[in-house]
Each structure stands twice: as structure tokens, then as C-alpha cells.
Image 1 (cartoon, chains in turn purple, blue):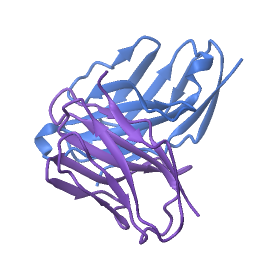
Image 2: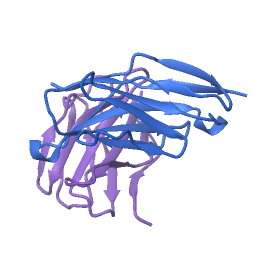
Image 3: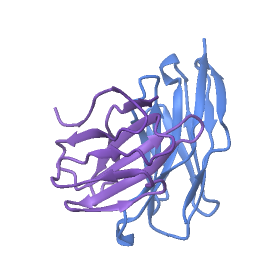
Image 4: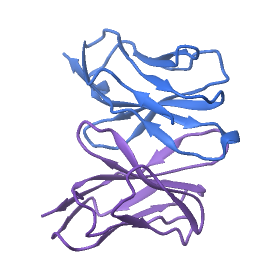
Length: 113
Length: 117
């Protein structure tokens, strides 16, 4: 089955620790995205990548880092510099041509205490 | 910068009735895509419908249809014959066209739809 996998579904960390969320896709999509979802704020773009070894900051990149070493993988690291990391994180991918749409993973709920 | 606005945080509809969710957007582009995504309690994002800006005809997918008003920058979603399974958060989203060089998707803040039995 083609799709996007995110693991784990729930993640718990202590404050001050970095944590990496995984995102893997087997759709052969060039573009990948990370979003953060908080109640009442919709989806906010953290980082996105349109090609291997290249990525751009989204609207709320501070305290996050990413890498894109392989086309199918786009891991997100939530660093200790992120002031309010507890949130639901969604990974997505898309083609860069037509037709245009995004495919989403099931998400990871991160709780930092 | 492009923005997407959903002015209805919450809507309710009686089962089997019709409901319309509103979305407006701001852009200076002429070529772009618009989407409605559904997020049920499982939180899995599901594409409901897509509209290409260059197409004048409104998109339709079974019970879901849009009213795309390009000049007014409005993109509303109509759900006919509402079902209990339609209860979810609905997000409107915008993407710049392929000639623009970047592929960011911009989402609204969502509308929570409740379906009453």
C-alpha cells in the first residue's frame, strides 16, 4: 500500500530533551511538509522540502530542524529551544506538478512535560 | 502574502439537510489551487474536493460541491444530504500554481461541523 507513515503515534519527552519525529513516504513524491496543529489554529507550516538535500523554513520554524537526505524520508527534530513543543504534528507529501494535492500521514502527538 | 480565512469556527446541521461552509482567501496570483480537507476524530486528513482556479466550472464530488467565486476570492463547500459520518473539522487550503515556483499550502483555521441525528 502506498502512503505516508509517521511513528510513533504518541511521544512523551521531558523538557530540555531533543526529540525526532519520523516521516516516511513511498509515493515517490518530490515535496514533503511538516505541520503543527494546535486547537483553534489550524495547520501551521514548520518546514517543507521540494527536493532532496534542500528545504525551506515555513511560518513557525524556530526551535525545529529537518533533514532531507533521501526522497522518501523527512524527519523533524523538535529541539529544546522550542518554547511550547506539545502539539499534534502532521507530515504530508505531494507532487510538484499537476494534479496537485497533499497526502497526509496519521500524525504524531508529542507531549513534553 | 496569501491568507485563508474560515469565519465559522463551528457549524451544525441536521442529518439529511444541507450545510455550507465558508472560505475566503487573499492572493494576487491568477493560477492556484483550492482544497477542502476533512479531519475526523481520528485526525487523519482526507481530501474532500479540489478546484483549479483556471476552471470556471465548480467542482463536485458526490454529495460535496463548491461555489468558487474567483473575483470575490470565495470558495465555499456545500454538503448535501448530511450524514453522521460528515461530522469533522473541515479545512480550506490554498496552493500557488506551478508557474510560481513554490509549493506551499496555506490552511485556514478550520470549521467544526456537527451533524445532529
